[in-house]
Image (cartoon, rainbow, N blue to C red; front, side, top):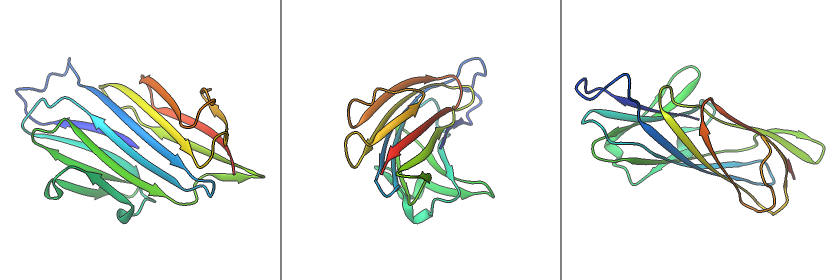
Amino acid sequence: FKPAVNVEDSKIVNLNKYPNISTDSQISITNTSDLGYKVSMTFPNIGNSQEVSMCLPLSIADTNVSYEDFPKERVVINTTDTEKCVVFKVINESKVTLKWSLANVGSTVGDNINLILGQAKPKGAFTTSYLTLSTDRAGSILETSPSLDLASNPVTFTQTLFDDQIIDLTIKR
């Protein structure tokens, strides 16, 4: 997914100072390779004309996308040839939460599922990613790249993003 913040108030926008953004992603993976995401994005409220968006793969159906604690009339889903972006028209909020799900993701190799998860780094923003991965049963995440501590379920990981975040997983079915 790709998070972004857009501020249109020219009195506030300063090209030398960009916002701090944090994403808290909770990802659940089933043994049948279904994927559930819940992402909360926290950002500074720095203007009266601000939009926050999260762009998702085009393959995710609109019916599999939902959000929490945000007025329906200020949310729009824009679709292009390559992605769909959920746009939140922010007034005084400093956090948005989006949920989505995908069925049958990853590639199956023998008894394992190989899966690549990613988060784009917002251009110009200092971004911290908090990630929690959980599976149907403990010990089913066999390997990750970058290497994570797999001793517990869920697996947690915090990273300051300088580039896009990519995590390769091997999961036992």
